[in-house]
Image 1 (tube, one colour):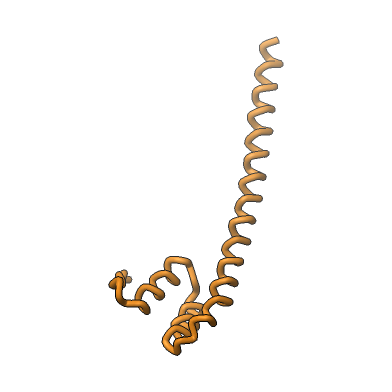
Image 2 (cartoon, helix red, strand yellow; image 1 turned 90 degrees about the vertical axis):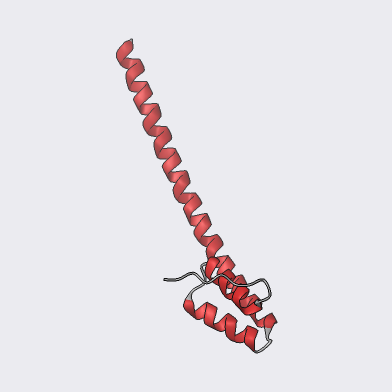
Amino acid sequence: MSIIMAEASDVYGILYQNLVDAGCGEKEITGCMDYAQKGEWKNLLPVLTRHKKALLEQVHQSEKQIDCLDFLIYRLNKDFTDTINKSIQ
């Protein structure tokens, strides 16, 4: 797979690369590129907003998972420390 870097004056190339970098799917990219080529730039906003919302939902889910792991690690460390302290007494 080759990476194509867009020239600064290549609006469509820059748009395409940004969509790829943002993790947009093929359907989203194709739709956005079609809108751009038709000059219907305002139609990109709902597509990009939906994608951003989906990414934020993924972030929030990951944060919940990290919180669960943090709690588990805390409990394991606390239980381990309590066990050692009891064995010393």
